[in-house]
Image (cartoon, rainbow, N blue to C red; front, top):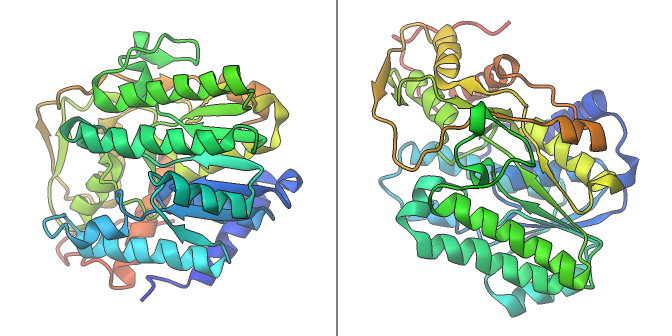
Length: 373
């Protein structure tokens, strides 16, 4: 059962695209394959591209942080809620008429058969283990689902596609010098996740050098938004507050992240796909302003005033980050993020409140809630 009507959600996406970004006529008729496209970023991107007239196909095994992996994880916090979110992703794709190929991208021959049938002109590579702590705990699986899938997709892409978009991460930078990173900042990642993302960047560039494959590398950061099940910091804060529990901050709360609403990121990818200047470039695609974790916690407390914030030691291999400079993306491809933390995160909280209204979450009666304006 859906949390809310998929057709209503798609209508809202269409209105959002028309109102905020205007026409994306260059996407009309484009054939775009999303590898790992049933994930948090991927399904939101697929829906937005379909609204703009692109022919989109999703290839996803549903195994990595998705429906099949949640079936056996009985100890996962809020497992029932996440299962409903994941089912809604699939319903939304189906409602939009976007084909979902349930296929493991590590299987080179099966993957190639799908791509040969679809014949995309553009491939967006999203398949990966998108969690730094999980990557450090299980490096073999992370390597397998990140670089093995990348190798297979790149081998098909050379000579067959016009544009290859690779999703990297702000974690490639490691510690931000002076709390700010541009695309020219030297990369010195900490831990398995950032190292593999940087390795992926270098491999993509080598395919351009050797085979002339046009590429774009994008580096997002600290994403949040509807139907995320990755247990990112903002998601945990909201769920804890809604259930009447304390918010736990790792560190002193002064660590800064460039929190980015997924809708800004999707807008950035649309810019990448429609501007020829984006080819053979790397872009930071974030809101472009580092904010402290304490500021995010304060927004949650505005909505749930009785919530208590607790502080615990910072996790190992967590770099000191901050702002990702997006001036290059603004200048070259017209990127224009619209969701500062106060706007985007409040919207995210309201979406979670809609889950409670639909019966998907239990909101304790003792927890007062600020009514959204």
